[in-house]
Image (cartoon, rainbow, N blue to C red; front, top):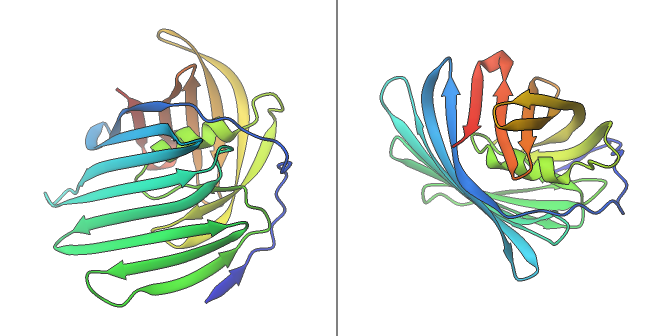
Length: 219
């Protein structure tokens, strides 16, 4: 199965971004209650980068799910391979995405069933992975934003667990006062939701999804 996307990306392909090492825990709050804690690491790896994440998600009925991920990126922050695994209610779902240029080759498995495969074709290799319930991916997005150019910038995006491609816009709203100093405020817009990112000199500090009453904070 293949899907072609006909979207215009405003980013210049020659605009190279630089990632930076970042790690820690992200506390996920919804309606004032803690619902998850994510551990993550973004680290250099042989001239490229590796980002890993692990989160235990609590459900209102007391059930829980464990989600892990591993992303390999090139020196410019472009994804080369992404792997994820979700264990919930005795079922394990796992998938991978391999990127070659603007082509994403996807494989998904449920328990021991035969894999489901498909491809998506992007008009540019500058694709950002933003998977469900993994907020360190927004730390990578904040690094890929061109802070010198600023303004509104458009990124291709892929959501692996939903197998959904599309695009997002990211806009700088300037500096905001915060305890301990000023933070840069980025607003991420999708077709469905707005997300506010607050970024300090060491990376992502806070993320808010007002429509869902979700706040994510770096411990």
